[in-house]
Image: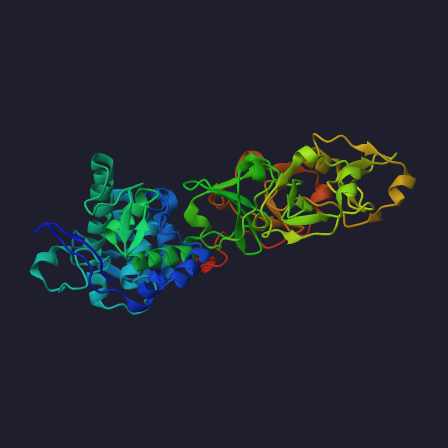
Length: 487
């Protein structure tokens, strides 16, 4: 697929006239566009700036290992600009470091333009025009004016230079690229109003001025580099500032920081690039803080996490001590995204939860008509620091049925004292975090690691080791082991 390129010798701006029909039709069709939005594609924010310019995203060894798990580039030697044949990974790394371009972006560009990364048997023509630089669909690749751009190394060199030396400088000095795209500036692409949210997106439309081509970029990035988070993780996009709860294969937007703070300490929100959460389709929003009281069409509900619990009537509302002043009147559509929870009646005890303890200083968490044993004082200190425990007699406790023990919350980072192993909690399991690199990639912060007694953590089964790219074709141990053996 070829797109606009700047032909330096002739200063000629070439535009596309031919598009891949099926993908372009999909990008322009209203229903299909909605489907793309549901999958997480946002034309105003295709990638983050770091996705284009973060040199530290991959080193030479990571590039080589990546190539070995995709196609044939991992074992291919090609002429560099000095005429010396080198491994493809070396050329990619040289270009990335020369222009401070994210190697991941160069890999995506190679795949988007010529399928070079995953093609097991690429042709010389694919290598000659690897990044599509200098060529448009209506142009002849034999045009003498573009032969200086020919060749794998040249293509990478010119594409990287176009982004760092030209597009970026044009935005910084003139406020827009030569193609007219700029962060915050409205443009029309394929008949659609586009306002790039950042420099990266403005550059992507400058290099490929069509929605279909940028959908391809997004899809490749999503497949290769989108992260897989444990259920219950709350993340925030660095560029969009949007906050999401990741659960059950989707990301549900939290309408405000206050809503997030009702679920987790704001310091524990994982900060990630927006492109790292594009694996997840966007679910229905969560608009209200936990234990909010809402009313719609005469019905009252208590918001309990992601569910809404109907309050039987005003008598129950008053008897349970709820305050009319705290009642929020909302539209029916505002609560449709919440699942229906159990009814709250006169027999419902402590619908917003109660921390209790008995004469032996055994702690319980009571919610509804069920009590949950808190197996360690550490959990009290972690989750109930500002809530004094109410002392109940054995007789008072007996009216509550015994449920499952109170668990560490999903997404909690934990370790045992004097142990270097770090885990994240998910669905009652502790999942090992294999390295500092993975820890940082997931957007976690060292200060949020909670040290807990061994007697508590041993009660949690060991789950699968965290792999940020569980659903993607990324580095494998086999590939990494082969790096040193590859010429």
